[in-house]
Image (cartoon, rainbow, N blue to C red; front, side, top):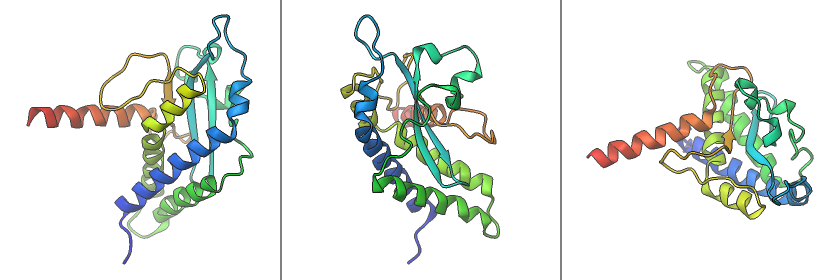
Amino acid sequence: MATSLRQQYAACRDAILAAIIDALHERADYIASIERTANGDLPVSGIALELFPWHGALGLSLRLTSDFPLGESRYDSADWPHFDFTNGCKSQSIDVAISLVTAIYNQGKQPNNDLRDMAHMSFMSGAEALLDPKVSRLLNEFGINAPELTDRFVSSPFQYIVTDVDQTVKSNYCDIVLANRVAQRVFEDAE
C-alpha cells in the first residue's frame, strides 16, 4: 500500500525532529562554548533550520543577539558566526531526515506535481519539527532562553526560523505554522 503525502509529511516532520534533537545533543559542547553575557546568559536570539531539498542538505544555525539587525537580514543565517554549526554531525537520524525531505521534494518531478509545492511541504514539515516543544526544552537545558510555542502568540526576542532561500514564500515558515495553530485553536474554541 502506497503512503499518502500526508503520511510522508508526518514521517518527514518526525525525522527532522529526531535529526534536530540528535544534532543539538552532538553539538552540546559547541553550544556551551559560546561566550556568555556578563549576567551568565547565552546571548542566543534564534535558531534556524536550513533545508535544501534540492541538494539533500539540512543544518542548524544559531543567531546571537549581536547578529540581530533590523529588517529581513535577521533571517540571513549564512551571515551569522554560528551558521551551520551542526555541519559534520554523524547521527544517522540526519541522513534519514535528508532522505525523506528529498523524497517529498522529488515528487514534484512527477506529472501533475510542482517542485515548488513539494519544497513548500518540506519547509512546512521542518517548521513543525523546529517548533516541537522538545526542541525548546532542550535549548533551555543548554541555557538558551527559547520559548515553547504551541497555539498562542508569545512575545519573545527569540525566533525559530525556517525560510526558503529561493523565496517562493518570502516568510518565516515557523511564523506561518504558529499562525495556523492559533487559527485552529480559535476555530475550536468558537465551536
